[in-house]
Amino acid sequence: MNFGIENLRNLFRNFLGGGADISAANPVPVDISPGPKVATEILNEAAIAAATTTVLNDCAAVDMSEGASTLALTVRAVFGAAAQGIRLHILTSPTNDAAGTHTAVLSATILTDANGHWVANRLVGLTVFNVTDGSAGVITANTNNTATVLALAGGTLNVWTTNDVYSIPGADYDTIDFATVNPAFAANTRIMHTQVYEVDAAYIKVLVENLDAGVAVTIVEVVATVGP
Image 1 (cartoon, rainbow, N blue to C red):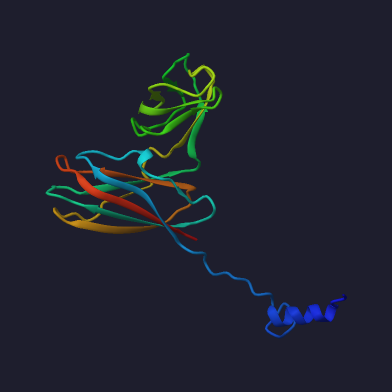
Image 2 (image 1 turned 90 degrees about the vertical axis):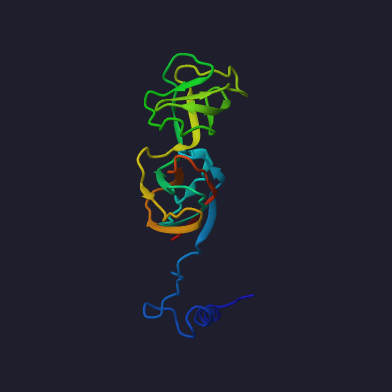
């Protein structure tokens, strides 16, 4: 069957050209409408104890690496008979995952990276992988350049040997806030606060700090809405 050039031209006219030939004056229509906005819960804590800040493991990473540039962060929380509220620490990352090598001598429990740049105990709860050995363990404590596990498991030797390669998904975040948010506070109230940003970073996480020295804040939720 020979469909024919004229039939093709008619198809283009009818379906793409609005009945007229495609030309510089009547180009093929292009959909330039912005894509959908997507809202995702990234943190949900039943309670944050007095004078405590959540850690990186408590927050899912907001992935903006595919080109999204607008970010709205919505926090909800319930305050009791407190004197102070909460503070949001917004952190950015180019990679999400920390990676490097063990630069110290053999150790069964302590990873050391002389080039590390972590905040003390902010990595607690994350899993560190010994890529060279094939083992892994959950971090129980960390300094600015060490991470401690109870034990490594699942590998060949289950120890850290000099120059072993490691990876810690969700750990490679700034030590200085990209931004901070202090929602309005009043004792014995529920709050909902949204802040909007233009962001060029690839990944975002949020830590929530309870500023009150004596009373827990409860039902704390952070939702990230990402769009083009």
